[in-house]
Length: 239
Image (cartoon, rainbow, N blue to C red; front, side, top):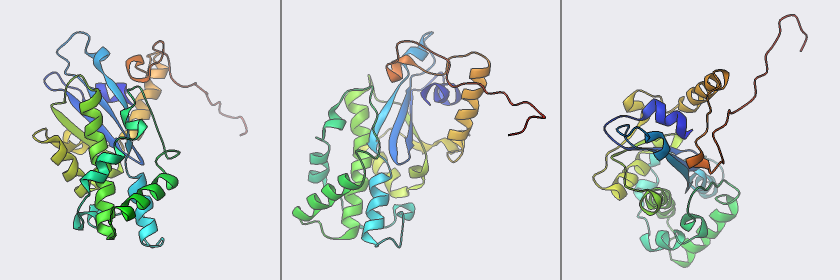
């Protein structure tokens, strides 16, 4: 997605991080277009858990009667344990330099079980406090990744994905970023709900036009390449 983000959301005046918060968090860092070689400065990688641990925790805490924390309103009632979040951030993935990616194979059920055990041993027993602490991990892991591995902090952050609707999570990201404005891609004209579908349409168009869709600086690929295969359909043939 970073190359698509760069051409749809980059601008000539400000640098930006386009932060997707799905099950896993990932982002594209877009330098301003002032430099002739700005595309080479585009970066991106996975930041860690997005909604994965939060949704699993809600299922666990409600015995399956709820599947997510609407607007983060439940977590907003609690108080995060910063010392526990700091300990979690010492996990190997957060310290690993990019390029890197992760998924539910790491930040899944077993990881949540360990988090719940850590909460218990830290005397965090209220459900709202547990959710607030897990939300803090998502927010802190995003900003930790920026500060640890970007050449400089962005001028603004644009959120997308399901987690962009979590008001409490957005507030916590804003807290950790201080004066850097945090908004959503909706506010700059690109639907957060349909951004991924739009991106795949752009990638398909680039493939037809023989335009490489990847950025080696992001993925660590050896060169820019065409993405995907073209399969043309023919009328009159059975399927």
